[in-house]
Image 1 (cartoon, helix red, strand yellow):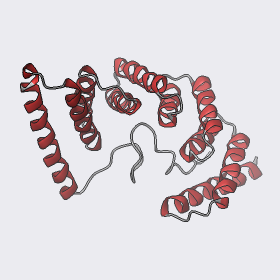
Image 2 (cartoon, one colour):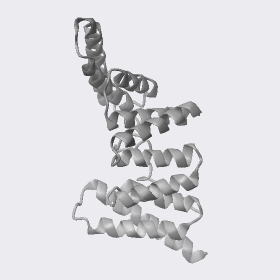
Image 3 (cartoon, one colour):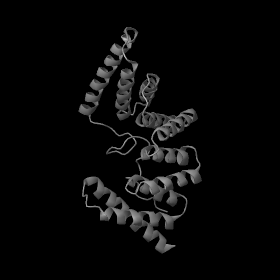
Image 4 (tube, helix red, strand yellow):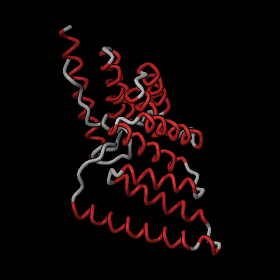
Length: 233
C-alpha cells in the first residue's frame, strides 16, 4: 500500500501552526524575538518571586510561567516548557489550556526520548484538561493520538478518535486522523468513507481560506488514492 497524504494529519501533539503540531525550523528574526520575550518573562518572574514575601499574589506568577511555557513550546524546548508549566500549576493557575500544553510538552519529550514516564504524565495532563473542560477537543484529540501511537492501544485510540469526530463536525484534523487510523489497520473502505464525507463537508463551506483549500486538496488526493487502490483489489 502507498501511504496516504499526511500533511493535515501531522497535527499531532502540540499547537496548530503552519508546520502542524510537530516543531519546524523558525527564521532567525522570529527566534530572536521569542528569545527576547523569554528573557523578559524570566525577569518578570524573578521580580514577582522576590516580592512574594512582601505579600505579592502568587497567581500572577502562575500566569507568567504559563506564558513562558508557551514560548518554550514554540521553540520545541520541552524541558523548559515542562518546568514552566509545572511552576504555573504550583503557583495556582488552573485552566484546561495549561493542562493541555503540559500534556503536549510531556508527550513530545516522551516521544523524542522514549520515556514512558513522560507518556504517563502526558496522559494525566490530557485527562486533567478534559476534566476542567469536557468540550476541549484538542485535548480529546491529543489523548486519542497518545493512546493509539505511544501506548499502542489501537482499538481504544481509534474509538476515542471516532468520538472526537462525532463531537466535532468541523474539527477537520480529527477526520483526517481517523481516516489514517483506519487505513493503517487495513480498512481502506472505512478510510474512504471518512474522506468522502469530509470532502463533501469541505465543499459545502463558503470559506475559501488557504487552510480550507489545503484541506480540500489533501482530502481529494486521499480519496483518489484510496479509490485507485480499491479498484485494484
